[in-house]
Structure formats: structure tokens, C-alpha cells
Image (cartoon, rainbow, N blue to C red; front, top):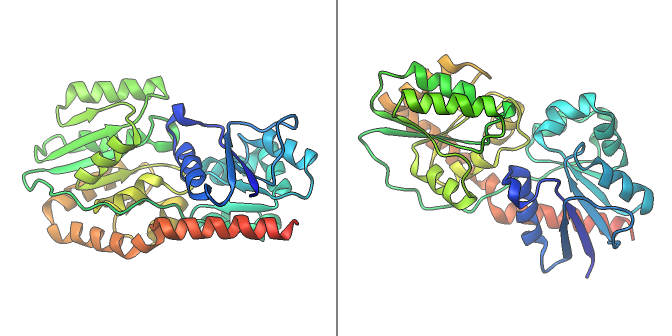
Length: 321
């Protein structure tokens, strides 16, 4: 059985999307390969047949060590949102990772467009997945809205908070915010809003199962990010029967399609507030959001993700034997 090294700089304690991708892939690959999940690989570490590294910049040392110590062996680099929409344009280590990789993975169809042309032929798309859950029975007395993402600038939680303040007169809306306080100033803003408005509750960082249940029970998921590689919470919402409102960025358009009716411009809290009111006041609108989500759901099937991943690893090993 071939051995794979799966490198994720963020491991379980970080509770990030990248960690959950790494852990899910390790389970999907188990039984086909011997998988070792590590935060970093060094040349002195035991060898393997292939290395899969999440994050071109943050895993750059592992990628460089592998390319130097095991030239010609499969080196697969998974590009995250900060890679695609920031680092590969400005960071020398991230660009070196692109050059050294034998294959590059993007997590939604628009991701390829961000890879420099010189390396675009290396790209494959593997869309992430989530098991489908039976939709919850949801209250008709009020609209439940959840945003799930750690409090950091890339997730733009302030746009969500400003939209909540705009809707201060709407007693029929409830807002839950899930995410650890990675930026103290954003945590202060969340605490201030919770003091000012009893409709808004900030729960801090929660485990994945509890977060998914909150997404399932909400009427709407809001994802206001300024950059995403392929937002897992959006996929989980679609697979839970929860409608999605999302910023119009490449990572969201790549998952939901450019015609998704719940897109708003980055940072536009007024537009987000208007969509939230419309979802509460117009049942046809939230039905449109749900219908659109159902049309995209086949992309997010775990069997499809697993088949794409196994095909990539199998072909990579065959090409380097």
C-alpha cells in the first residue's frame, strides 16, 4: 500500500476549514493508502510515495523540503482562499510552491482563473462536500440567521454586524454568530453588538457538529467573506436545506453559480440587510434561494469528492512510477 503525507499547518486545535478538509481527506483516503497527517514535513522525516500539502504559502517549507529531497515524486498543493486571492500574487514562497508542485488543486471552478497561466495546466478542481442532512422544521414566527466563521478580517464579520444594526427594528429576525475571536477588535465589536441588541448572539468558537446543527436549524446562512477558496459552511448549508446569502466573490460564485439570487457586493451591509428583509417578507424569495441550492447540491456529494480525490492520487502515482 502506498504511503501519503498529508500536510496541514492548521491541525485540530485550530478548528479551521483547512483542518477539516485535511481530516476529511485523510478519512476518504484511508483503506486505499497509508495516510500520515502532519503539520509539517522535513527531509529527516520518514519518506512516502506522495505529499499533499494544504496552503501554498504556509506549507512552503514542507513543499520545498519534499521537492529537494524527493524530486520527481508526486507533490500536490491545495490552494486555499488566501493563496488564490492574495498570496500567490505577492509572496515568493507561495509562487515557489506553485512552481514545485506536480499538481495544483483548487476547490471550486473559478479557482483556476486565479492561477498564473504558466502553472494553470497543473490545476484540477476538487469540490468539497458534506453529507446531506434532513432539513429541520423551522419557526414561522421569526427568521433565524447564522454566520459561521472565525472572527478575522478575511471573513468580514463587520459587514454582518452592520447589517444587524440596520435591522434593529425587526423583532422577527434572530442572529447567531459562530466563530472564535482571532482578532481582539472584532471580538470587541461582537460583544458590543450583543450588549446592544438581544436579537444577536455571539457563541464564540464551537465544534463542527454543533456548528453544523446551528446552520441546519437556521433559515439563512450568511457568508460575507472577502476571500474564500471554497467555503465549507456554504456547502454544509446547501446540504442541510438552509438558504445562503453570500458576498459576490470568486469562491462563492464558483460554488453557487453567478446566477445565485442571494449574492451581494463585498462589504455592502445595506444590500445584505435588504436581502435579509426580503427573505423574511417574501416567501417566494427564500424558496428561490432554496431551489437554487438544491440545483447545486450534486456538486457537494461526498462520493463525488472522494472519487475526484482518489483519481488524482492514483493518476499522480501512476505517472511517477
